[in-house]
Structure formats: structure tokens, C-alpha cells
Length: 260
Ligand code: NAP
Image (cartoon, rainbow, N blue to C red; front, side, top):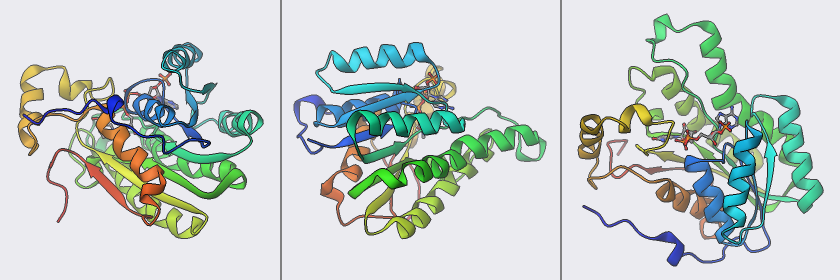
């Protein structure tokens, strides 16, 4: 089995002097991205729906020596999005990186039996909120800034039981291209498409040992992904190492079938 890297012993300081916002970042992949950007020198603004989660995550990151600020933000709430951007600018004066990471998957119903209210919620949180947050942030984005949108391997082939979720992640592949066109040359826009990562969000895949094993065996690398694997990819795309990359999606899925 592939040996996992201990990123904390290998990382550089690519985000010194930069300000990064990560949505849905009090646990899982978003937390790992905030941690990685912070360890590389960024001032990070973390957020999620619950104050308690925000406070706990801020504490954890501070304990690692990271400059961090927490703001409650339910991404489909207009006032919360406004607050997230305004409080970031009030505190740090600018925005260099935004990682749009929030998503929901509230239903396992087949598409033809999914309630309209669920379709609306999926669209609102998984797709629309990214556009609306960037509308709010645009006046404050610096030259050379970078957006990273968290899509999913499911976007390439939406599976039953998470079909509409998958379709919203497909939409993010197009949104990444469209935003990259609109925001160039000041801001680059890319996406990460994670494979299976054992987080609360993916508990249905990973909590049962047999199902977990089946999913591990589907990968070429023989293991599930980690939040740190996703953070490494997001940090690369957000950094100047990726300064000639825009409009692209990086699949980080251990070799799961995706595309040629
Ligand atoms: P997770 O560990 O369950 O974490 C979810 C985070 O999102 C929490 O911090 C939660 O905090 C916050 N959150 C939930 N709803 C929110 C909302 N409406 N507004 C703001 N914050 C919200 O999830 P994850 O697995 O890291 O997923 C992160 C992203 O990766 C998602 O876009 C997901 O689609 C994508 N992804 C995950 C996998 C996987 O296998 N895990 C695979 C492909 C793609 P609060 O409860 O405090 O709000």
C-alpha cells in the first residue's frame, strides 16, 4: 500500500503575506486545506454554520501557530456571505485565496423521485453559493489571486444514490471554466475533484469495513484519500507554483476511473 506522506514535515511557505478564506472549514477537507494554507504562512479565515465548531477549529489552528480568524457563514445565507467577506477585509485588508468547499448531499432518492425543495437546496449550496460569494469578494481580490472550487470525482460520473449531488459537482467543472474566463488575468480559478475521503460527509462509504474495502480496491493506489491529500492539491492550485494554470480541475482520487 502506498505510504502516506507526513505533509507537516515537508511543506514550504508559499502563502507568506497572503490572506485565504476557506468555506466549510471547521472539519474534514476544508479544515485540512485551512491548516495547510496556514502552515504555509497564510492568514486564514475559516467558517462554517455553527459558532461552536468555528471556535473549536480556530483554537486547534492557533495551537499550531497559525494566524487564523473565524466567522460563522452558512454559505446559502446572503448576510453571512457578506459578513465573511467584510470581516475578512476589515481584519486583513485584502483577499488572495478563496477555497469554495461547502456542499450537501441531503437525499439518496433517484432523480425522478427527488423533491423540488431538495433539488433547490443542492443547487443553492453546491453551485449558486460559490457564484454569490465570489460576487461579494470580487472587489477585494488581489492581482495574482486564486480561487479553488471543491468538486468531486462524482461530477465525472454521477452515481445512483447521489445522482443530483453528482450533477451539481459536474456543474462546478463548467463553472470553473466560465469563472476562469471571466476573472482572468487578475484571478486564476481551478477545481479539485476528490475521490473517496473518510470524513463525516462520506461516512456512508467508509464506516462499514466491507464497503470501505470495496472502495479502496477501486483505486489504483489501494487506499482511500485523506483530507491532507486534498489539501496538498488545493494548496498547489492556490499557490504561484500553479501560476500558469487556470480553468482546470485536478482529480485527486488515487487513480479511480475518471477520464482519459
Ligand atoms: P465534512 O468533513 O463533513 O465537513 C463538512 C464541513 O462543512 C463542516 O465544517 C461543516 O461545519 C461545514 N458545512 C456544512 N454545511 C455547510 C454550509 N451550508 N455552509 C457552510 N459550512 C457548512 O465534509 P468533507 O468530506 O470534508 O466535504 C468537503 C467538500 O469535499 C464538499 O464539497 C464535498 O462535496 C467534497 N467531497 C468530499 C468527498 C469525500 O469523500 N469526503 C469526495 C468528493 C468531494 P458546520 O456543521 O459547522 O456547518
